[in-house]
Length: 599
Image (cartoon, rainbow, N blue to C red; front, side, top):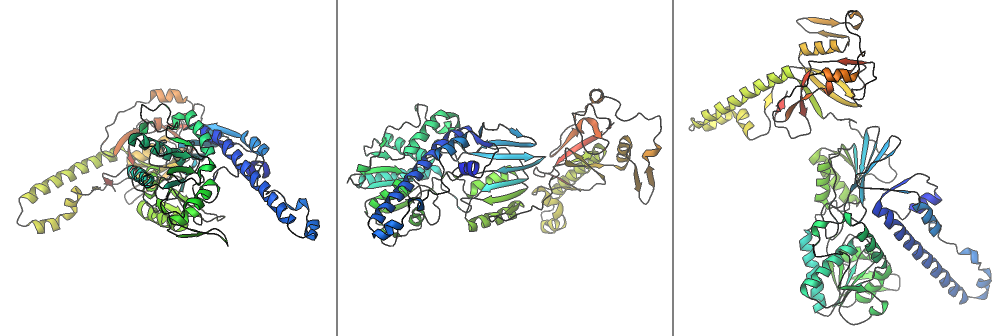
């Protein structure tokens, strides 16, 4: 509901006319949640109306005469069932990794874990990409897997940061603690309240306790008072492909059919017998969990297990912080005598999971949302210092501009002549290092002096960098709006520029070379008069051997655009194609871990 609660208001009141993109499980669950919320809102309004009527009946007749029925109006933010149905008709469902195109805009969802249907969305337009994580989880649990996303390297990553500075214990230890605490309380004759949300934690904790009850042959009753969660379980069965199959026993036919869990009736609330109760909502701010909390909290035998994150100001958060008195209103205060246990079964990634996700995705800039201010700022500063990523924590309504190069250069292409020089110098450097090692073994007495003298070379054995110097000329062009850098020798660069028919003027201390496009001989072949297919067939491909982080690569089918705007395999009808048959290049991947450094 914290994601879709205002959706019908957005479409039917604010008149949003566009399409709504959802995963198929979210599309199925959304009307269930929204209709339930609509029913609760209607009930509360009707109850307030009745209370107002009773209050007026007990007042003076003069006040009664001044009272008009129209003075009580329904909450303008609330929605009707008809609004929900109209809103749902605008939804487009997507499969995981399926791309939906709207003009020049593409939208792709990726599996996020968290709850059934949760997705990360990548949005790309004109080569600029943004990845929005939403809520995600990096640790698989009993019923859902962890987030699965490739290293997309987006221009901007918008990430949740619920647990920005918190590292959770392992799942196994949390599960064992939960079972032990609950079993101990049952054995001592107490009652256990586990406040949960209807989707996600309700299913996860039900599976854990149901399996434990089976293994330990326990007869104490477990009650499930989440009518909405029971409806959600149906969709978990339907969308079984989203379930984490590695954690499911092959003997279990239906993961969400619990043999030890029964429905809860309100008459059980004041009964004096051991029981476990799952009740919504998870933060004990209203609903059945709030009613049960008021009845069970004053008794020392009882136990309340808080299984996830609670927003500041809610009763759940106050219990986690250790408050022993909860003031409900001016006249009501609850004394907390029962035991309070906080166990993190939250479906959000913790600080370590967020950092690993950022390291895997490799964004150029990072925006933290969905977290507490201090924690977000600490994590943002750490990410900036650790990974050198531009990171911000925006405030509501504030505009941010990113100071980063839109298209980072990922490869440098090195001409074959220069690469041969690099290889030769690299072999010489290696031989020099081998010789120094042999020499160091024979100079044990003067080792300290020797190490000081040759420390810069000996240290290369333990570090990752070997420095090689060479001379080259840089040439820059763009391909599909992304920059590429090429390093040539002087001779090969002049030849290459002539093949492109580009005028140039190269001057140094020894000589000067001038090439004017207007003086091109009439005997030279005209540009672009041959089809691209014919050109590609005539080009001879050469297999080149990779060496460490440098690999050879044919230069984009040997075709370069004359206007320096694109290099395309789809240029059959392009009249501005020029050919370079003898250009042989090495590729240096800047994003891979450097084995050698070339200057």
